[in-house]
Image (cartoon, rainbow, N blue to C red; front, side, top):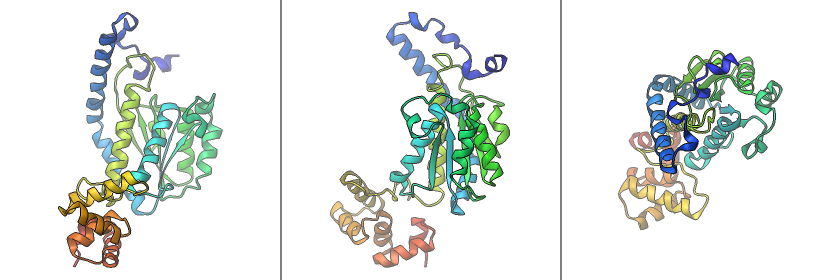
Amino acid sequence: MNEINNLTTEKRNPNTMHLDEMTVYQILEVMNKEDQKVSQSIDHALDQIESVVKLIVSTFQMGGRLIYMGAGTSGRLGVLDASECVPTFGTDPEMVQGLIAGGKKAMTVAVEGAEDSEKLANQDIENLHLTKKDIVIGIAASGRTPYVIAGLKMAHQMGAKTASVACNVHAEVSKYADKNIEVDVGPEVLSGSTRLKAGTAGKMILNMLSTVSMVKIGKTYGNLMVDVKSTNEKLKIRAKHMIVLATGISEEEAGEYFDQAGQNSKVAIVMCLGNYSAKEARQRLIDANGFVRDAIGIK
């Protein structure tokens, strides 16, 4: 019991002691003010986040995988971020994965005892057949989730790199990671409900980790999602719009380049800006490790 009393995420928020007596507007107002503290807390952890991003980039450059691991809200956030990398950056589903204690069922309902199970963690990690090329990031708002700690231990034994994300300082989980990110968002509006500020912090941090890492391996051109997969009509329209924004040509011309490039925005942009054939553009992208800017500039 003393241990939980020391966790910021479990303390009572002095600004919401009479939450049940407040008006709807007052509750909304205090929640909004508390949420503003999340960004400030992350600002203090940018150095830590940077070091983890660099680990992820080196992982991707070696052909390794990024594995998120968490329970409850933390696990769901990891699965969400991993799944969104596929359509946003055109990645293989294996490249970024999310593990949640209790498996897919736990995405929608609580699985009793899953977050306390070291056995489940060990099995989930073993099933991945990790190598030294991979990185496992354990996410735990409290910083003490047994499933996450066990998973990091097993990942370390298998030779993978490890990192952790927690919303308490001096978190237990940090002891088992090569790199750690710790943010203190303060007590929740609803005491102990870490799906609130802690969840928001987790989402923001994971956004940073995956997005910046993808930028640094050539998945963007400027601030454009040029590797987006055109799997439906909306995404095809978006992909062609990216070509327009990157090159300044008309929508009609962009559509022509898009089709000539086999509906690959990157190839179309290199074709247009470098005056190359589709075959030449593809090869130049390969030579440039996927970076559009370098593919255009290579002589």
